[in-house]
Length: 288
Image (cartoon, rainbow, N blue to C red; front, side, top):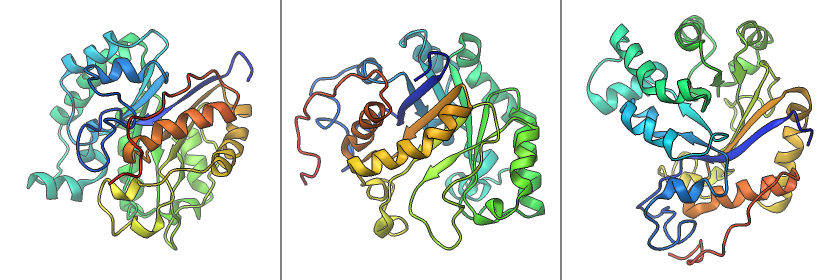
């Protein structure tokens, strides 16, 4: 890899303390008290997904800054109030009417990362039902206008976006990254590969657990370990971005029992990037 290429590979979240998909014993050794300290020994980036549910206290965010090395980067998922109004209303009982206070609240939560230079990117993930119609275009434009000061990546999942050749042009005009995702494909799914639209690339690998994708819960849906051959496929998929951009992010979201860190290390090996070998897990990942 050329020296001027910055590649950040990690996982979507680092804290899975309980539930059937816990990382305790599978990634984190027994007695681990500072999970971020342990995680950062293996990875130079992490995608924060808790911010999707509520903007974090800036004090907590400053703590993340303080506990990670200077070259560590955080990707932050945008609050669902801006991208999933229906889900927000179902969760809170409130209509997702965006106010200046909401915008300021989220900006403030990002401030410690932004000021420290550790904000790698802001991820705006839209639901699979989010279509390329007038409402969808207005909503996407509003997010880009509101958060365009950051390095912004958008995850569009409905095929109407990739069917429209103008989508890439609109994103390029704003230097907004179009997230490339790996997940089970359905008739309404976005194309398997989308074009680069910014001076950086952003990949998310959700696993290929088609059987449980809609029937499973938030843990079993992501119960999928990429095989060595599939890791090579992902590396090949990333190759054009690694050649054409100076900055690439890739995150594994197949978080069941530490599958994500195992696959993230495997991808670093496949790309011939520096890596730290993971210790053998204390528990077998498929134990019930």
